[in-house]
Length: 66
Image (cartoon, rainbow, N blue to C red; front, side):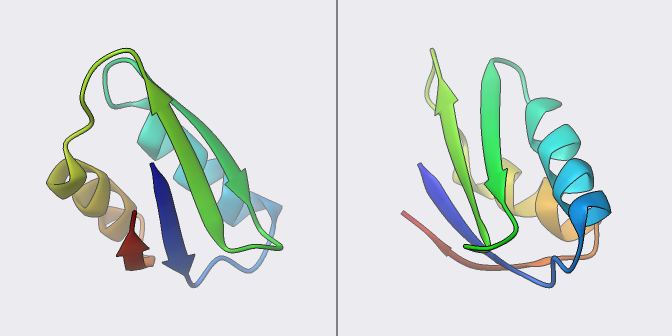
């Protein structure tokens, strides 16, 4: 799953998003500041509503989830 994120401006932002996403059981996240994306992998199905919620709780905007 790839999530397009708006509002990340520094490595601190990247760490905040990565930590929030990896707080979801079984999720591994690779977050790119340059691309403005997070690529998620998991052994189980990932709940897109939960992904959106944890990113928005950190203060960032989810533009797309694919």
